[in-house]
Length: 212
Image (cartoon, rainbow, N blue to C red; front, side, top):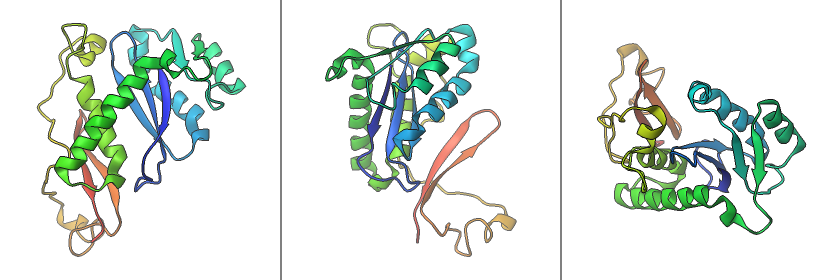
């Protein structure tokens, strides 16, 4: 299932919408963030590129969404047809026909609200919290199967050693040559942003830094 929903607040990166993809078979989910709904087609193509290796083993046969204009464009339908993906959309005013991804959004939103309440992180970092909530959902046991969505899709148990509570404090080490050019004289970047530190193998952490 595919669903777009508006974020309750404009993010620090100018994002206004979240685009969710959920595999109905395994429960595994992905989320992307859009500045405008017109970007949806671009991110559908990005999703197919990001999941190319997975789709080689588990072909994507059908994409279901609601009947909003950005979802039912001729461009979108032609693109999916060219990639041998059947397109389905729900009837007007019957969002429950795409209920599994709707349920995902509801649960993820509740996780995000709790994370903000506990951590004290400003809500303008909503996309970072929502991405964290989706990551958590993917490694939680599937409600009807004795495995996590990650294990059902990837064929192996997830490594959760790198998971931390959302908004946990951390200390960032910088090389001497980075300290002024990257983060300013006081070691703090001069503008609000979210950023990621990555290793070649996996995501290490996502930093949320505020302007001082």
